[in-house]
Image 1: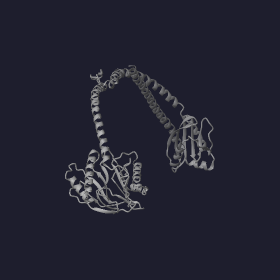
Image 2: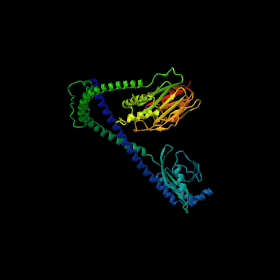
Image 3: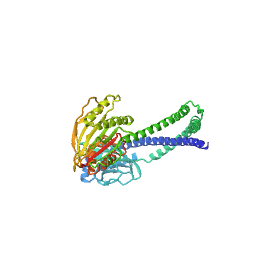
Image 4: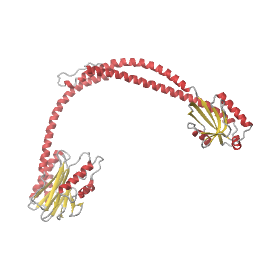
Length: 530
């Protein structure tokens, strides 16, 4: 109970804190907006004021005289008259500086300088630019004849600078007229406005916060306390017989939540009961899948080295299913004393259906081969048997070869399977593009063509399913046959088991953490000879 009260206090305290923070944000926002607007309006007023004087000065000053003063460096009566007039304008207008200058590369070349309270700069005096002077505006007005106002900070004083071009009788800009107006009271005005705004908004916010908190405490916090108490004991008391009842009647979303919690309680207890049944069923299915996996593994030759008494060859195979059970399979068995059958196949389905179909086809192929039929006859017979009763429409790609381990002669047939990879003694693994027939179980009455492969001592044959070249990384790139050949040739001189290990390692390194989408089955046969 103490924990519940603590959580309730946290909600109330959190609500007050959020309201206080919202009030601060609103106060700051309103104050900032007022300050910004006040500042912009003030600066606009002062800029218009300063600009009017620079325009007036540029209108009555004779621009043709500027070139004469710059060339001779001598003043005359007209120069003195303009100086007095500029001083009168600057003093009456309250301007800090009023001057006529020619922008140079490093500063301003003075023609006239009106400073009522200071010594004016003499004719052709060069003032080097300070870092905060609006140099770009001055050069733009002089070079392009444009007019631009810019406020800037200068020696800890707020100054508004206005600039107008001074033109000669031909319309060419010969100098600029600039005025710097001291703005002493803007900041104090802004602070005064902000103080009044903050005070008024603060009072309003305090009153609004008190009223709002009273409202949400009555309509939100108190009902939530009741809802919290009901939810807290919901999970701990799922075994009770009576349904939970929540005394909340606010007529809004909180009451809707309360009714939803009551409904959830009913559904949760029902779900837990159903989930217990599903869990038990899932455990049973997993047990059966595990058993199916062991049965499938037992169906495939898995003891290596196989046929240790036979020194004419070496063989190794592996299968890694994408699911608990797969549709790929390999097989090898003697059909008589000297002829060894090699099988690599890929069923069109996965999981339990694919595994069942796989075991049926494996048994058919072995039975037909053990009866003395050639590879061609074996697949034709199996195809006919499957098509006669194949309502599920499943099919299988098969590569079947029968090798005479005494002389290395192999007779093989390919029913829609991957190309085998062959290595001659001392050579490299290369793809053997044999003739493909149609998949087994795909079409009734199919005929298949055999081909003969002569294996010399040291020859190696690698057969596989498409799970090897079509292994996919996290970017959906395929492992491909080029990488498969590279992996094979990296261990070309090794024994069959080491060759398969090299391929598995290369595929695993390429795929990384990506999910395995297809079964990966491989078989490597090395012919040693007598």
